[in-house]
Length: 152
Image 1 (cartoon, helix red, strand yellow):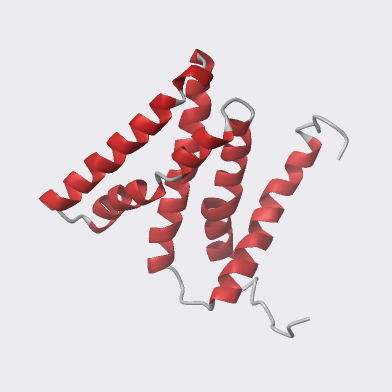
Image 2 (cartoon, one colour):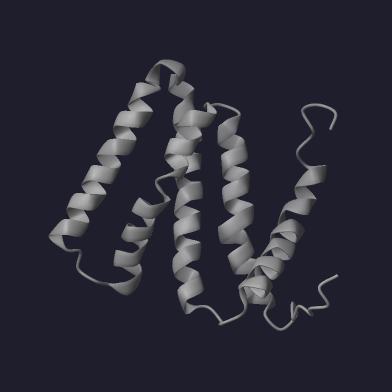
């Protein structure tokens, strides 16, 4: 339709890395978590992506965090803890795995963000299109492993 050609074979490794980190892994982890915890808690946990981004950035670039950066991370983590804590009445003891899965999904987004800064420079269309094809290829085999809970 757009008459743009995607060089999937040329950048296959990049598309699979980006597709895994930015789509397949977080989508699967959030879908798993959503079976146990409510949507408001999931959205709060999803909002930890910038916190993870700062932490991944410190580790990736090997820079020493500033006092204001540490204060910002502390305030962000405190805010998330307060907000998730307010939902503690709806979270049972078995939800810990789901919370960890949602936090790992947000961490995956943060890693993808830093990866793209050092990845091959491609157009936004190519990155989006190629990574979604790669993510679809990775997730497609799960159709045969994970049964549908109800008729689509």
